[in-house]
Image (cartoon, rainbow, N blue to C red; front, side, top):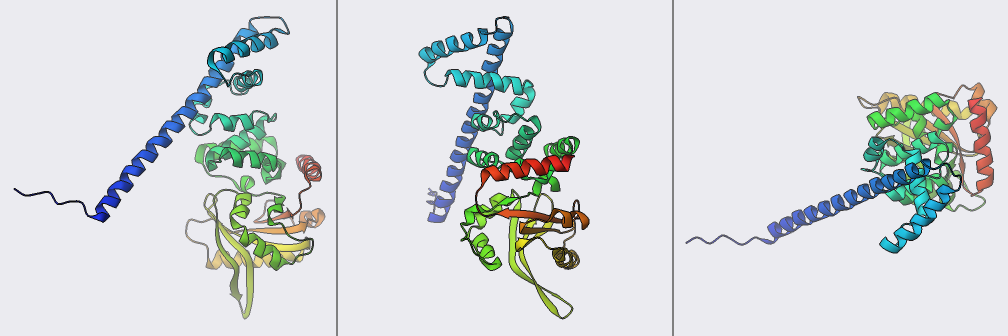
Length: 341
């Protein structure tokens, strides 16, 4: 009688790995389904309460019914049914009345995501965060940081007409691929670099490389780092590109030039030269033309306008290394109003 040979150590490790993968996948599936069910449950609760309120003409009926329900449900079921929680569920139903849309979003966004999104009053801004969160699979913490960091206001998209915003979000929703307007920002928030009051371009570059993970998070999803100080030879002269990235969604090489102080018109010619070299020597089949970002401490809007850089392959943006939230909010509001006017 032949005996079945025992598993060797490599086979045992491989089998154990496969079993672990099965268990982890099952756990993720259970958690995902539970999150989806919670989203749909809270939407249904919000709908029931809202319909009940609509049947009564008294102005204070909504407050009374929510307070009563909160006490009763908390006694019967425990935590999770505070007055504010129930009003949040009603708001959820008000803002997202389409059950099919909610069912689709619940597959990718948990209830904690919606808690961060619901306070956003502007519907386009709300859609922006939903689509980016869904496509880039943001955690709740990242979503919260993006909202607090005013990501929508800092994208090129926010300075476009409402129709353009809707079209770009629809493209992302249908294809999963972002437009350039969704990718480019101004300003870029680099306070995490913790630079001293006086620093050089090299200090800025080294600080970015040291905190590359945070810098990539600020740039946005799909950015992949390729090189720093990439040497290119044109004629008999060597030039160096500060930072070179690739964006998988846009399928474009993206170079970043770091500049101290105010934007200068001469930077355009420098970056155009680099872009043409990259287009000729580095661009692969199926890729779009390379894109350049000039990061400056300060922008000269009149020069940028006269150079006709808006809508070109060169994006000029300010970087901020020190947090000043109130000034930033005012600055962004003015720039958006000016652009839309």
